[in-house]
Amino acid sequence: MFGFLKDILGKERGKKRKEIVVDISELAPIWLKYNQSFTIPKSEEKTESKTSELVINKSDSDFFGHEVVREFYDPYRQIFESQKASEGYMKLLEFLDRYGTCPSIVTVGGDSEGDELNTVSRILEGITLREHSVNVAREMLKLLKETYRDYENLIPEALIISFGHDIGKAPVLREGGAYAKADHPILSEMKLKELFSGVEPHWFEQALEIVREHHGRMKEQLGQLLIKADSRAREKEIASYDSELKLQSWDEWFDTKRFLEIILPEINILKGQNQWDALSFGSYVYLQPDLVYNSARKLGSEKKIVDMLLLKISNKQEVIKKSVESLRKADLLSPELGSTKWGRWYEIKAQWLNKKMFLIPVKISAFGVLPHILEERKEGFLRKIEKVSLTEKY
Image (cartoon, rainbow, N blue to C red):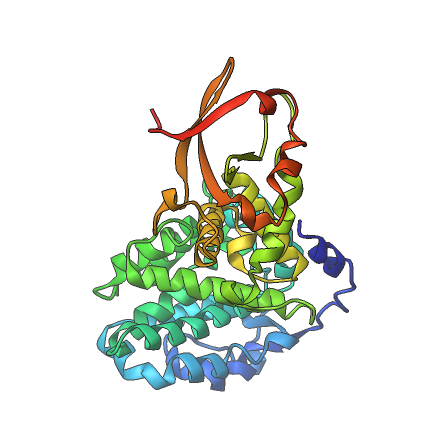
């Protein structure tokens, strides 16, 4: 876990949110006109059924009810109706209204997102599923307008995947059954199918695919926008937890000089039998990708940056590539990488061992240390290296 996050998580989050119980008939004016099939018993006809009451988290009450309809449905009512998406969409919002007070992250059962974001899970547990869904929807609409000139017809699908992509996190869908321990995207897809049963928009199959695959590699542009909207929402949610945390673009926070200072102590240090993270030879220091990744994360931690690239393990390769690109912009890489490559295969030849490795060559002058000082660090196997040369992988 990032060191600064440990400190932040140690602070008191505050008192538990107060919950109030409101009779559903009192909420009817907000949403009944969109759900004509629903009936509400008169006061004298009330039963003890749990369905006649709705528990609402007081601090979340602005997000749903008439507010969410006014923001995410009323302006687009005609488009939703023309695409036959109104009924299912209202059912989706009702589901979140009823079951969305749970945490926005699943920390039990081996959920893929919960495993990836374990370093900030305690922060995200304080964000409800309803809050997160609204945050994603707002970011999605912004991205939609930035990406498409004629975006209006995409709004229904965009909002449905925004509000629907995480509904599988609701505990009510995870209580028993064959899919109790399934990843939340699978449960979200199953629930959406149920909510839209009988009335499916023409793009619904694509929407289901996006929801199912939203933690993987996405080909559909709308799916890519959902991933970006989700990341932006998460970054803002984490940053809002403490004023010391910062939201900045990569180029704003990535300090090349400090990055190389973090790497410097690791050059020519033998770790175990013939193991090393950085090797100097001739005019270059050859870095292993893991060292580049860990150094970028350490730099982000020092600067108290909230960046989903650094928080998600699945973004490891992208973090390495962006780090290399920052070094390229500063003209600190070997010409062997050209203008696009982020590493090459090299053969390390020693007296009694030849080894092929994928490495990132950085100019030795970038570290501000005389080469002979780095050479003096070498021990054992590192002293036996005779040549480092480009090679094919096999």
